[in-house]
Image 1 (tube, rainbow, N blue to C red):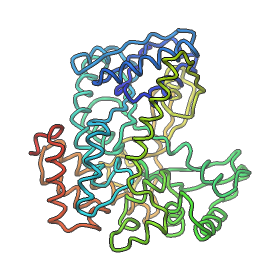
Image 2 (image 1 turned 45 degrees about the horizontal axis):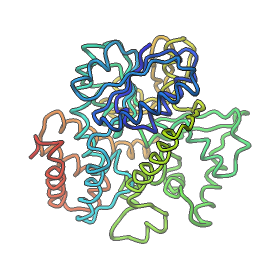
Image 3 (image 1 turned 90 degrees about the vertical axis):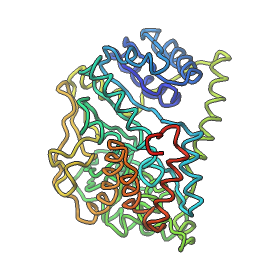
Length: 440
């Protein structure tokens, strides 16, 4: 078994995914091929994974490293699974640019990795690299499954499923923790065991459509009552999604700091009081990046000084998908897949949707869920069309399509004039010219 990790310099995440694999007996003897274009970060990840292989896996696995584009095909050659966690341009400079340039126009963001003007730019930077990955995979590991964790999830997975022959599924952390965290936050832990739920929509905006306790009782009436009361009682970290419950009738998968910027409702320069009212953490992602870099430096020092690396298997989907495909033991996930088969009736067929999927030795089989409530389909569609335009812009290398993607993006359009949107896009493309020279 060969498992290739693209973007292995994402040290914390590579530890979680490969650590999970080392906790699964059927995957413990695999070759783990680590690929990155940053030599220092690749060495750091090799150090970590080798230490973990020794500590928790009795050195069963084979660890190989592959640095740079010239060694990419060798990293992929013969792979059974390819995990993708790249970040084109990194935190410094590209994420910084994605936040700081829009600020000059009065456009504020929280995360900027999924949609918003920052998500559009990240998609434009990443699709060409993904296209190169696909070309290599089609040549040297055509039967491999591509497990994509890189954001913007719907843009990148949508590109891979529509425009390459690579077997692709997009994976996120939010589906498997959605109802668990919701019920705990509302002091409803007693309803967790045996609950049944249905989640569907798009990545970071998939909807908890139905949730019932072990006896089949609908939990939404009590959820709605408690969520309304909690938002009225004082500040907490999930106020935007609880407001979704009030306004739209349903809870969604990804956090409030993410969802604050996927719509025209909460981050508005004319209504600055909303930031305080809904406890919205502007510039949250750059803070996380700085803190994560600092934490890794401490962890690295511990490893270099002889510290052991422990790991307990997580609920992260990747290792469970691999195990299900290898053994045939079925496993259920929330996966990002093409809507071409009409899995969600009232969303575009070109969209990338997030729906329940069954995994076994036949692969990954998505489930048709019918139509979403109209208001939820409208919210999803407001994000889907900028996603589709971003893919078209990346394929055609046309500035006009970049402008149009930004014009249709709900938060950007709510804040800026069309002329300002065009000017902002030009400034961002110029700032990113080392990664996007074809637009300059």
